[in-house]
Image (cartoon, rainbow, N blue to C red; front, top):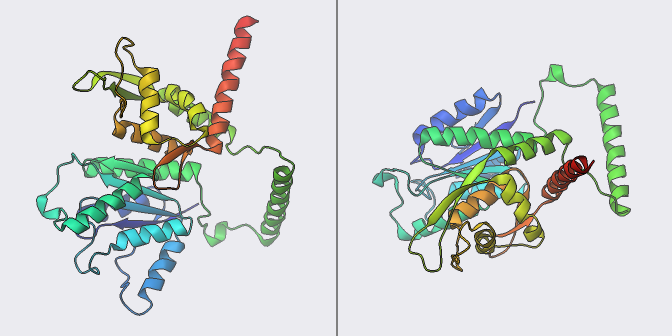
Length: 332
């Protein structure tokens, strides 16, 4: 199975990166697609660009410190328009936004205050989805590869096969019949209040293994303190199981930070401060990592409201069953 992957990025400030990224996608066995060869200002150019994006399986947005390229319509960003179109068409997107602490040439930064403000709003939009930040080109390429592999594993698309690998007409017809029958069963179960598994057993095991294997360091800011203290590593699995009951209703990053600060505070004699007792960027990284695994979702609205997703509920259920089975085994 091969995927078409559209590469969207700034054209002026990311020229070197745009030369390397198609090679990374090709090395993964897929087809890179780029839009700079299409004159969107020409006759039917905009329609051709949209058709090209619509025919892709995934969309990649890469952003540094420029909002619009030279020659673009004043105040407009071709990349943001492409990204919005991809989302509107339901094309899974991954974003890589430069870290604010990364070293970057002053000449490749947005100088216009209005455009810089638009850029910040665009970055916030990207970070609300499946997103990572990067420090340098090596970091960018590694994280891009990781994000694409995760999307392909957990959000597979139709893709395409060579004609000589396509199934015979009789096989294709049988697939179509079984697919329609399967859809009828799904509808019946939905009507009758049944519950369908949204994750395979392999996906459940893999996600649990990743949560158990990975850690993140949380620091704490106390009401009477002057800086961050008590940086401690916590397993993602522990954080996930604590957050599941809290995320049955939408929670903002601030509310999640308050909850984690209160529950995981390692120094009970000290009271954590009210506003972001755990760093906001750490909370957002946790939620975006959970989002990458499809365990949480960000509800639309003026604020980022994080909720547990159906796959997240299923993973938590699988985890609890494992724990109960262990307890039963110990009692026996």
